Image (tube, rainbow, N blue to C red; front, side, top):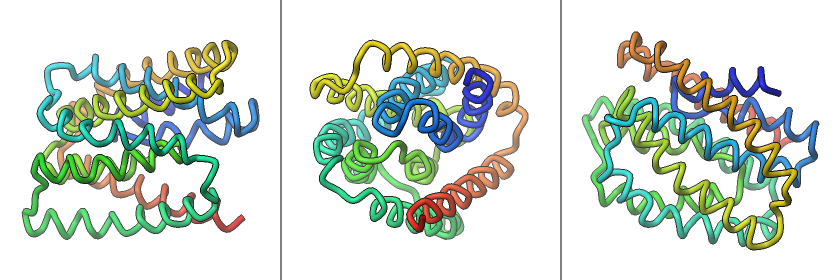
Length: 235
């Protein structure tokens, strides 16, 4: 588990997301789906904290505040409605969304269309709600923050700060409904420690990447994430 967590942390530390895509199948096999979700939420808090510490000086706090103003209450609402939604329908919708975001991000970049703080606030509520329902919506936040104009360290740090607030809310709601026993917290801390270590190791990769290469890697992740979600929905 520690080895998988370290690799997942490095992947997330390079492109801003992807740790849950690697870790969730392993967590489900080891602990079952009901425990895997809160374990991943705790691990995600630690993984995002690692990225913030690695890129502390690069955080755009105004963008983070605008996003969190609606994403945090959205996440709380999403967790409360988690059991009321059919998971396969959510996976199908998210898979199609991720695939559509690859050409959409490129279209926005060609036309120099950038999101404002208001856009981040409007989008944050929707993304926060979806994050409360599914394990991760990282591939959604990637094009959102990049369309605001953030790349490399600034993108990684700001996206991580926003995600930290959202996952913190998610864990708090899990605890409120009694879905966070001590052994789940322990497993989440172990997994999260590996993610944090991977985030720091990834810094040495990111500083050597060009912005163009960084964006190509992000597109590749969104494509693979969308296809994996569609495959999961079709099972």
